[in-house]
Image (tube, rainbow, N blue to C red; front, side, top):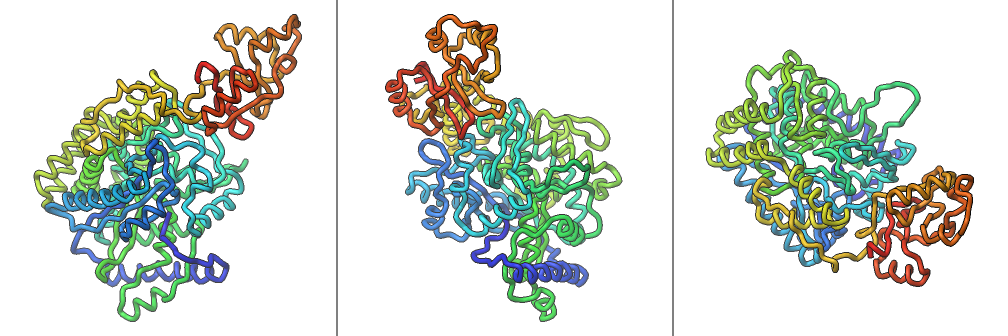
Length: 614
């Protein structure tokens, strides 16, 4: 969520000064570009690992501040939600055993995090979206209690002027309102960095956009959200919608989303990209900056461009241009933000090698992307890939082609040649690209999750299936085998003692009635479907009653052709919430001599629990 500001006034005076610093930073970058000051004689790679904290029930564990305090390592930092952590790896020179070095540090730091997490009865899991996250963990009480996060939330909500709306349709459909940016916290990624020379930046950036669709399709690992089977890489839709401040109007007008792929091929230099972003996106965060970048440059020192970097950290291009300073030398990077965490460390390293190999192996014919490919093709390829993953049919250079044929026939050879060109060890090339090849042939992490989740749903209810799926992911991930070698979980025993809350055992696929429905139709629906209890809603979707077979029988003779559901329903309904303990629900049923309890969030029915479920 951008630079980690310890303190900030965020007032009008600070904002005014920040705006001037931002303008001056862009001018300073222009001067450094013209003066040949940007490093261009070396390439480095780097990465950022986001991870989920889970408890022994495989649910989100809001312990990030405690664990970071125990780790006491500057490589680690907080994320928006208190059940996520981020880890920043050191840059490594591209070539020879660079990927082995990255993997060694990544594994070592993850081991450190796992050790500290265990002291707090928590575990570390790498996954694009944690299957067991529920609506309960998306409230403000799960936001990491740091001022910058609250400030981001307040500003984006104010700009939006209304609740955020989430609508994603896949096999299932998810549609709901939420009152904070915390849905963004469902996303965890493995962000890749590649240093690029300033003269080649625009060619490299456009090529990065062109290959984004197929690279994503081979890496999908986020098919589930709140128990719904949505896109193969649901993070793409979720991230954009969770931070979308655009207002819905009756007028047709163009508005650029805060999270976006882009609108056109880039021209000129990286400075033009930064200018475009400043021109189309409002400033969210500010901070006090001591020294003007132009003044620093005049003194013969390299400026950090603090205002530009802070602003750039709040504009979420899937391929993001970055400026940094290392060892006193300024450099430019492309940050790949669309790769999900997991399924395993070795899967992530394979994704890393595939992307870097493609980037450095770009054939000369792709130097001028506008001449050979319509930008909208690249953008549509990216969206289709997020939706369909390995089953995507792309438009590539004007012709349709499947992901399998494109990756195996064209892109993997380019990646191989690219890694060979920069002298990456042959053994590492074969191993890492071989994992990508196998995954493209046999299935991605998203497909592993979906296949196993569907099997689990045949045996158990949604919440239990999500827990068992997460448990199996954690178990398999510890082996560090690529996902195609993971064990299936078809035969998982249903453990009764693991159930604690009503939400774990309730029926969620509900038939509902409305209070103005005719009684004869309602009774027929109950008979046809062998249902003994039906919740009754009003036109606002709020629970107003309960129709039960036993209550109908007690009423005696009624003219069901004339009567409405409101005439025969129970109006004083006893309800519970998803986090009501099962033992409490049992006692309530016994005390009130009832056979079911509607499960509600606010006034909305989300499930029903009966004696049969108990």
